[in-house]
Image (tube, rainbow, N blue to C red; front, side, top):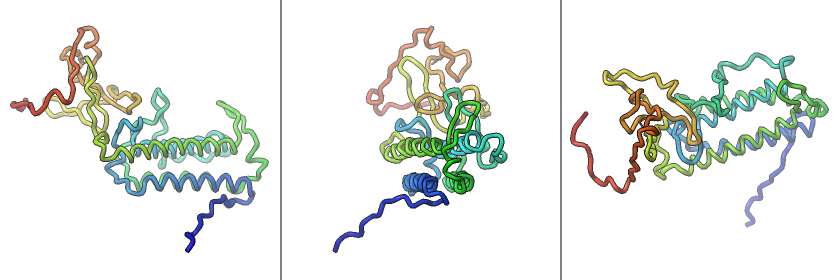
Length: 262
Ligand code: FES
C-alpha cells in the first residue's frame, strides 16, 4: 500500500491571500521550532554549550523579543502600537554586543506561553491588513520598512536560532552541556559560564553584575588563577603583567586530588 503522501502547501490564514500565506509561513516555521523543544526539560533551558553562544531559554526569550520589537516599533510604530507588553517581556535591554542577557529561572511552559502570546498579537494586527498596507513602507527613526519585509526577516531570524537550539539539543550527552562550565584559560583566568554564585569567606554572595560579560560562548565571569589580582577572587587581568604561565591539560592531572578542605 502506498504511504500517505504529505501535502505541503501554504494555505492563507488571513483575509488577503498574500498576507495570509506569509502568516501561514510564520506559523509553519513556529511549528518547526516547537518540534525542536519537544523533549527539552526545564533544567536544560539554562545550560551553556560550545554549540551556541546562548542557552535555549535565552534564545526563546530572544525570539519573542525580536518579534515583539519589530511589531511594536516598526510595523505599528508610535501612532498605532499598544503599550509595550511588559509582563510578557520585562527585559528589553540588550548587552553591548546586542544580545539578550542570560534568561534564568523560567520554565519551558512560560517560554512557550510568551511566544504564543506575542505571535497572537502579530496575527491579530497583521491578519486584517490589506495587501497594499502590508507592502507600504513605514518611515521609522531607524529605517524605512514594510510589514512584508519584517515577516521575511522574522522567518529568517527564527530559523537561525532554531538551528542553534538544534545544535544545543544535539550537544546533550556529549559532556559539553553542563549547566556550569569552568574554562581554564592558557596563562590566564578561570572563565565560568552558567548560573553560578560566588560566596565570600563568610558565605555571603558577591554581586556579579559588574563581573558578568558576554563573549562568544555566553555570559561569564572570570576568576583569578594567578594569585595576583587586586580584586580577588575575580581576575583583573594582572596575569598579563606578571607573566603568569600555566597551561594545564585534562589528561595530565590524572587521579591526583586535594587532601585538605581549605
Ligand atoms: S588570573 Fe587574571 S588576575 Fe589572576
